[in-house]
Image (cartoon, rainbow, N blue to C red):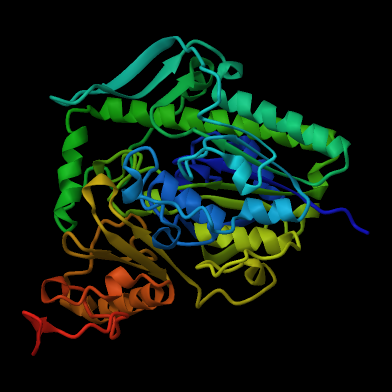
Length: 478
């Protein structure tokens, strides 16, 4: 009887896909070597632009409106984002399949931080990690009247061994060594805070970029006159930064990514030394991206640009099967649980899900008709959005302003919003129809039932609704 294959999920927080591209100046040499042994997904997207909703989608295979964690767990009261703990999860399925399971690093899926109820044997999350005392060398600080100062990036004098990233990778390797020695298949999540802001990095890594010219993104100087007004308003947060300070933010961000890359190198070396590499599925991904200066913005939030939604997704299959293959099918966070479970020959999630396994695309299915969908429930200010991608086109339904339509094949940096142009009216309606298909299919009844006359501003409506209530005036049918 063949031994079950191990699985490691390397989850980064706020990692922009473009910095992982082989031709990018960001130094990620170990990831590049891992990619050579792996399948890469060219069109992977996050289910949501912020942490908790996307992470919960990874675990459950569901969109945020179906798992309930529609905002970050630490930012709103429970009634504003209520995770459904009864849902089956990837970790519960693996535990049921006799995997020894562990989670190290940022959790941020739900509020209890009791990972045992989700099938984890061992865990150490942000609630349990030790304090890492760091000595600042330099900082870039955002100052806004009436708000507390925000350190956006900086360097410190301690080396990489003094970082949380080094610590959690070390803990994970200790766990895997023990499980491997006992002959038990393991599932290990290693979830780094890096490269989430503040982009604080060891000076020894930062120095690697001293002689590398840093260029601002192609869309950096765009005035966004054809974009939603809140996007332009958000530019004011960063208006006092000089171009050199913006470049410094990028330099620190790239250094933070390199810190993660160094841990990946340590991990791969360990797996090969322990003769675990060939028997292990390694999934490298991010929960979402970071704007990193695109359109004059940093971090993430309501601007629905690719820098935020496009994520790196690399899968090193056991035995390095299909090494070097680039899959062009659309993929999303909620597709990962069913994909991993199928690759490991485990039972699927035990309740209906919104995602689908990507294995058929690895086996040759034509990806031309694939598409994906994301939703944003707006954070504390309630900027509700729905986003759909298909055949190189992207449509953003903004409930708070005018919509967005981009031809990503021709305009990958989203500098020209086509939504208001008459010649693209048909394409906008076509993409809106695809959006409604997803909304109907996933039971997003709040939107399908938004039939009140003041809510009718999508390019076309859903053509159906769940509610059967009749329209009435003072309880009198009319």
